Image 1: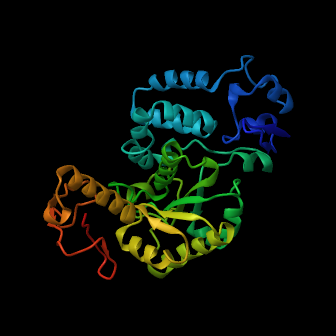
Image 2: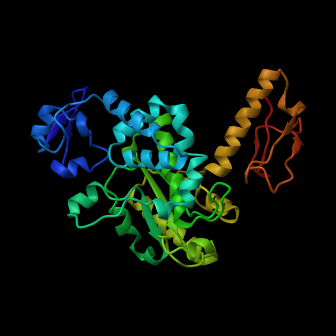
Image 3: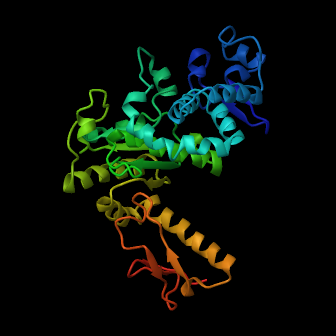
Length: 349
């Protein structure tokens, strides 16, 4: 079946009936027009009234306000995201300042810790087309399934993926090892990239590499949904990550891959190894540095001074500036933007 957008661009829709209502990228809920309900076998599956997106968003906002805790609000928003992404992003954009801390930090930390407890994406007896239409959000790739990497990525229903955020869950925010609970971070990050950066959610894919966990509390938790095994390390670990990278390159050669919340001992080696092989970056290393440098530049301009002649104080925040002797530093006046050979980052405005 086909429908037409405002720009008169024909879009083929391969789903209809209940399957279409379960596909979050295409589901419009009560906003399906009378004609669309007839064409897509939706008659009788929705209430009579055809609503605008703003009417839907207003109802969702009232429901959102009824939740008392931030984690309950997070769960509610994630449920909307998993059923009607158009409504989700309209709601978030209408209330961005209110909802950003709920979608991402700090609330996402609690969501990661309770990931297996609040998980709501179980599947029952469904057809193949239904499974591929809806499925779980993101991809879980466990070490025991390492030899099925290509098949796993083929199961992703969206074929034109352009951005992947991947984590192994070992250093989630300041919470440490959260196992597959770390999936909350790629989901949250990509949600912000869509809400604030305008990247289509159809182009994004959150991934968690399940290499086990050293968090004994998770290993003892009967509800934990990840691989119950101590983390693999060294050659086994790097070989597994390499299998993932090669499978991604095969499926989506032009992908942008973001490494997220990897432990320090693995973060830089992975970035160094793959930065010239695949379009990739590590947000904790490069993204944080870029924001820090941008902040220093803005501060120096506001103060009317050169960074080279200024002192910068870093207040330790979780793992960002802690565990390092970075309480204050003076930038050498003769150092330029980036000294790649020594990996020292400094700025002269």
